Each structure stands twice: as structure tokens, then as C-alpha cells.
Image 1: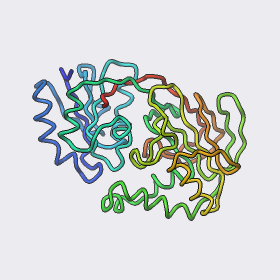
Image 2: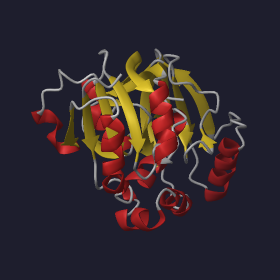
Image 3: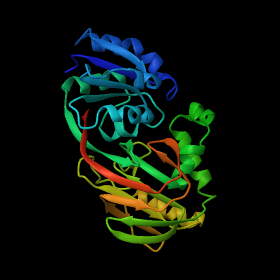
Image 4: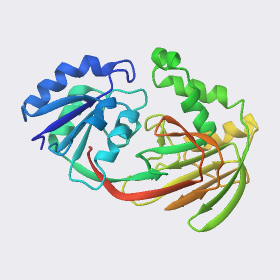
Length: 286
């Protein structure tokens, strides 16, 4: 464990917690090795990561997303120091925000091998979302996130719930064709939203080789909030206005769409191909 460590940082994540945590992280790593290096997320492409057996990500889900290409199908292990706004993967793995408690879990070296999603060669651990879900992630102002932290997404979720718009989707889900009008479509590996308080599927796991699919078909705010409550209370009732599916692969006809992939805004102009990469990365969790 931790023979050679690359510490990948995003000092702008969340409320710049990574800056506050830097000294404590150095002291922790020095307990195991003197062979370590700091790298900003924007420097990754210029670094030879071959010597490193451990990638320690200090940031949020976006930071984790940036290191995924260097971890897939390797023996390198991902450790997460959650410093972002959402930290959803950390929450799913049982990693606390408290730094000392997080260190204790890392020291136990409980390595899990988990799935990831591949969206047109863009890798993610959590989910990609279209429509309403993308609006929340892509349009929540940074100033609101800086002021309210994770709660900013909850505020934005309520506001955007009154501005739902439907879009036509032509999809093939595990070989079955779908033509729908939907205000929100989500494909998730880790189904938790709003930490572990709300989840598309509370029984979802990170290593089953299956993604969860949620399709919301309403523009009516009242109907939307009813569907949202069904998610909160884990009712997941299939109606004419919503569908819950599980899948291994999805293809979507597309000419231009804005979405988010693990909380990062993306514009995709070509058709969309979503697949599960089963047990593709190693990560420390509770």
C-alpha cells in the first residue's frame, strides 16, 4: 500500500478544502512513503504515471472523473479525499468528509473493484444525465455552490422543477427500441443523489455490471414533485409518467445535446453509446 503515490489535486473544488487539507495529507502519506508527487488535475496529461501504485484524489467527483483513464484495468488503487461540492462516489463508498476518519478507512486498505460507465469514450463512476438532471448540474451558479455547498443543488432542483421541458429520445436499451418524450433521462452506475439521502435505487451496487435507467416523462411541476417524492421514499412506482429500468448498454440517436457526465458539462454532437465496464477500477472504500 502506498509505495509510490500521485496526489491529484483540485484546489478550486468545493470551498477550497483541498488547500486546507494539504499539510495533513502530506503528513499522512509520509507515514507510508517518501515517494510521492503532487499534480494539479490539468497536469495529468504531462505526467508519466507508470511508477505510481496509488492515485490519491483530493477534490470532488470531477477530480475523480479526470483520473479514471489512468486507472482502468490496472492494479493502481484510487484513494479519495472528498473535497468537492457533492462527493457522491465517496458517499457511496462510505468515505466520510471528516479527514481523520477518512484516513482511518484508507489505512484499512479495503480495496473494492467497481464498475464504471463509458459514454462515447468518456468514463464516469456515477451517472450521466439529460434534461432536468443536466440543468441542475450545468446551470447551478458557482456562486450559489460556494455559498451553500451541496445544498445549492437541492435549491436549483426545486427551481428547475418549475421549468421542465420534454425532448424526443430514440433509444435502444439492451436491444429493445424506445421512442419517448422525456423531461429527464438518467443513466447511473452509482444511483445515489444528494449524498446517500436520495437515490434512484437504494439497492444499487457498484460492481454488478448493470446501470440504472430513470426516465421522467412529465412537464407538470406537481406531477414531477410526486415522482421526486417517490424517489426519496424509494417507492419507484412505474407509471405512464416515469420508468425505471436496468441495462448493460444503451444507444441514443442524437444530433446535439447538452448533458452532464459525473457533474461535468458536456456537449455531444454525435450519437451516444453508453456501456458498463464491469469491475474496471480498484478503489478503497469502507
